[in-house]
Structures are given as structure tokens and as C-alpha cells.
Length: 267
Image 1: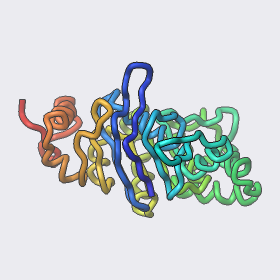
Image 2 (image 1 turned 60 degrees about the vertical axis):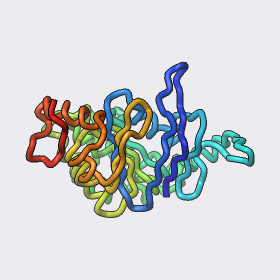
Image 3 (image 1 turned 60 degrees about the horizontal axis):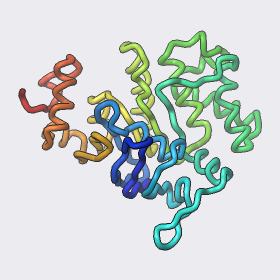
Image 4 (image 1 turned 120 degrees about the vertical axis):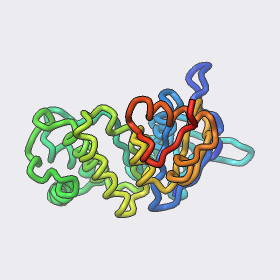
């Protein structure tokens, strides 16, 4: 479903992705953890081609992302129309909600399906109502973003992405800007999507969620995959000092306890 091959990306002299490769089957959930600045968000943006990559290949559902690859390692940037078509199949939700403040919840959701998918207004309205019920916000359909909590706005953002009926969903630290009491309501929606078989790539600092929902976990540091495997296994028995130190910082901050089954070597 998703295949990333030897992905490289630099900003000036700073290499932020260095030979990243992984595969994800349809219906699986990949969780990506790592320290700030490790390249997690950049990698996610490359999968949607919001960020162009220097070398390597990305494939989603058998289609190349961003470039057409030829023989002898040549590549050609795809047309804007091809890129737009790909983005319609790869939904993304960011840390910031990015809702249009002067449009209602309903209008925020129906705009893209109508403009990009050529869905009729009535069909788009029906889909919006269905998705708002899914994320628990049916009663907010005519509200404006300013009247919603951060958690509610993020759930609307998820509904808006789902309205495009994507093949893949990308989530980039979607709970990091929320007050702690609002995190659970957003994670519950994502957990439901996982149970329904949505293919997802999730960048998150929510370690319990990464362990419980992910089928596979990547620990990224300094632009490289340092460890990967089944989340419960590698978080319970981290092999590298880098991952051990990463987990230890969570425990020192009181975000993990010894009873969580997520281990770090003692200092």
C-alpha cells in the first residue's frame, strides 16, 4: 500500500532524512516516534508531497508520489494535476486545525469534496452529517470554529480529511497543541479509524497510543530509523541507547510509569 525507498531530504546543509525505507500494508497503522527535529514531520509531508524530497522513491497504492521514475535512476516531477489527484487520496491532519474561521463546520467539510471530487452539494452534506456523527459532533454542524474547543476543532479537521474518502490518512502530532483533558477525545476517533481498517501513518508523542494502536513502530532519530518493530515488543525491550534515553525522558517527565510496560535502561 505504502512503500518508501531510501528517502533523502535536506534543508540547506542539514540532512533531515537519511536513507529512510519502510513498507506498510493496506489496513495497517504505522506509528512514528522520536525526539523533536528527528525528521518525523518532514517524512510525513514527503508522503503527501507537501515537501519535495531530494532522492529515493515513495509509492502509494502502486502510484509514484511526486515524480515519475525512469530507467537509470532518472526522475521527472509530475504535473500539478497528477499531484493534486494523489493528494486527494492521501488525507493529512496537522497539529494546527487549519479550519476556515469564517465558515461553518458544515462548509469546512463539504468544500473539498465539492471542488476536488465534484460531489454534489446534497451528497456532500449527507457525507458531512455522517462523518460528524462518527466523530461525535453532530450537534455542531452549524457552529463556527471559534465556538469549538481545540479537541472539537481537531475532530472536525479529521472529518474534513475523511470527506475526501482517502486511501491513506496521515496524522502529524494532532494532539500536541491540545489541553491534556482534550487529548483522549481525538485519540478515540483515531482508534476507531484503526479498528475500521483505515491505513494510517501517525506521528505522535502519545506512547501508550503508539503501543496499543500501531501494527508497526518506527523510532526515528537524526533522520534515520534507529529501531523498528511491533510497538509493544520494542517499547518493552528497546535495544539501542537512543531509544532507551528517549523513553527515559518520558518517565522523568511523569508521562510514563514502570507499570506501563515501556522500558528504559536505568541511568
